[in-house]
Length: 115
Length: 115
DNA sequence: ACCCTATTTGGCTATTTTGTCAAGTAGCCA
DNA sequence: TGGCTACTTGACAAAATAGCCAAATAGGGT
Image 1 (cartoon, each protein chain N blue to C red):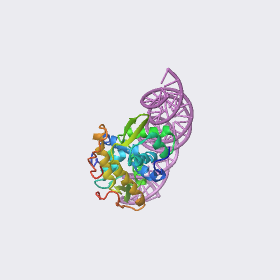
Image 2 (image 1 turned 90 degrees about the vertical axis):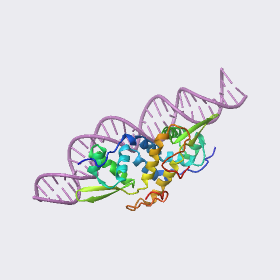
Image 3 (image 1 turned 180 degrees about the vertical axis):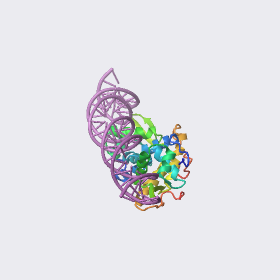
Image 4 (image 1 turned 30 degrees about the vertical axis):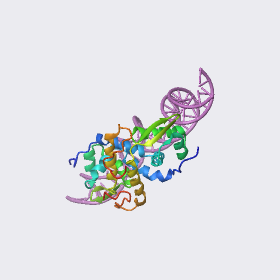
């Protein structure tokens, strides 16, 4: 039985890293927050509500995957969304939750362009 | 310093699960493969190239997150993409890789609708 | 220089994820 | 029934991730 098509795992290496960065409720919360405007670590920590060192690490994961950018202004470091297009597929994923139970439903309410 | 906006982590619980399911090169390969048509475990195993039990577990993760559906036909179990819309944001993520190095570039070539 | 505030990082433990082998289950056919 | 193929699951070890405290770094103001 031969392989029906060649699948390159190395080509999926970076995309997997991006998905991994988004695969945490707190980190999704950060991205959701930064959709509005840039925020500094303290503000993000206050909104998410955990240890500042934990938030700092989450931000580091998101920055290293290329999702966030950071900018220093005096004492504070402001994080911002580097690639706003991630918002569209986060919305897409969020809209899936309602329809998880039905089999074979392809109605993703957020992205109508793909069947 | 008060929270700028309320962030619900529980609302992000399921989306994070979906992202987690996609956060592995082999599982992305599976989804990529199933974009074309349904395949059984053997065929997927041959294409990805690892232990069949490993593939079975990957498929289980994808099924439990709601991304894949499975169907039995005789001895074989065919897996298929339950929500084809995931393809659009996988394409979106894949297009990010090229532009990771530039700061603040919002040119996601796959999804032109979101700035 | 000193102190203060903001953020990152080292060190640690607990938890989760990954992959493999072996054993188990499920349907088909003789 | 027995044997065969297809797939899943239990059990285990290795690796990665998460979260916390404490220490370190960096910039601003005095």
